[in-house]
Amino acid sequence: MPPPIFNIVSDRRGGRTAWSSTVTIEGQSIQARYWYDGQYVHNAKEDAAEVALQQLRVIASPTGSRPNGRHYSIGSN
Image 1: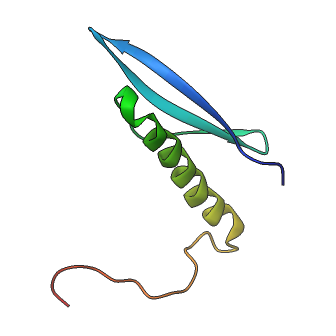
Image 2 (image 1 turned 45 degrees about the vertical axis):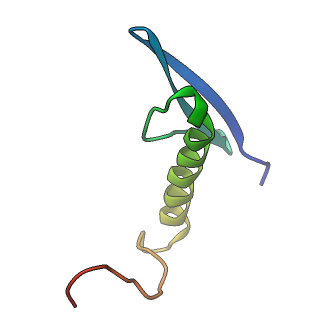
């Protein structure tokens, strides 16, 4: 599998610019969920990578479910 290709995108919003990212993996472009201030643009890349990883896990799983493992939650049992 070739390495992922990240693209940074911007959107002018009033007097500020918001930044986000897309990642292309094997020809499929996946967009980050959120927009960030310029000083946090690295978070946009991480967000796009996380979305891609979640999608790849669903595609790779034969039933479309999550892999087996322990799940923890905070709160009542």
